[in-house]
Length: 373
Image (cartoon, rainbow, N blue to C red; front, side, top):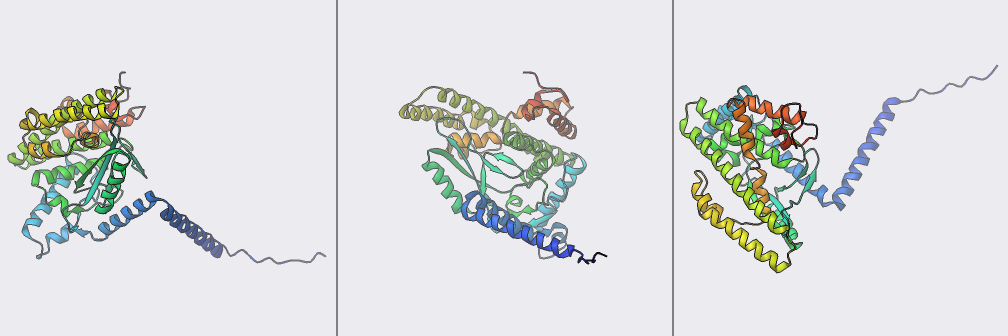
């Protein structure tokens, strides 16, 4: 008779724990190596840490409104933001989620600096690649000194650069973004437009299509602010929102013409000296326009601020990110009887049913059909 050998049953719990521990250690090792050798990994880690700090310091707006230590001025702004959220969700059917139900004081007047860059001899944006959002033509920095160092490094490599402040950002609904003190300090019309702009990102965002994403959000922000204030009987802020939207379309046309002139010049085989002269002439024309007919026609922007600001390829690219073919959005708005909620839905349908995933081609198309060539 064969001897019987009793085998111990596998300790599956211990095995699973060891596998998980080994996997975690492996991830930590890989992450540590990435931080040691990759500047991009260090940047993402720093940005993630700053975002975590902001999220950790969130305070529910409802509790702040009941807190006697909170100033009446801040409470008034917080109530306005909650009303804008409710309008966005109920009337515009934007994906509000829990965004802007909390508040954070960041302790400074600028949240982050945003860097854009471009070649000097072509109107070609410098891009960075990040998880989820894909390729983007700008990079935000919570560390201002690092932003200036990176801008300087790109400048040393021969790129045009542009650093600008930003008071808000969106995680596209992946986290419950808090309202930041840097946004609250804006005037009431701009505050509401900012809330609607960021909620528009939660509602429709096409990876690696930044000009469309930002221009769509600009459209929703100002057209939505107009509707919001009219519903509240605030004709002053409603008129200011209408005027700002007119200004945005005026600047859209101006920067489009400036880009056309630059593209035409860069298409020629120019030496360094000729390139410099061509840029001087074209940017001189642009500054004259901002001092003259374009700037003088603006209703809500200070033309002196625009005319005195920097002008180079990176500036043109950055300005056009938020103002790319804005009249297309208005055409769809009019096609939908000036119903903003229906316009947003129509744009979503066009974008999601366009087979080549080009959102601007989708604006020219009918739902479900490709755009004409």
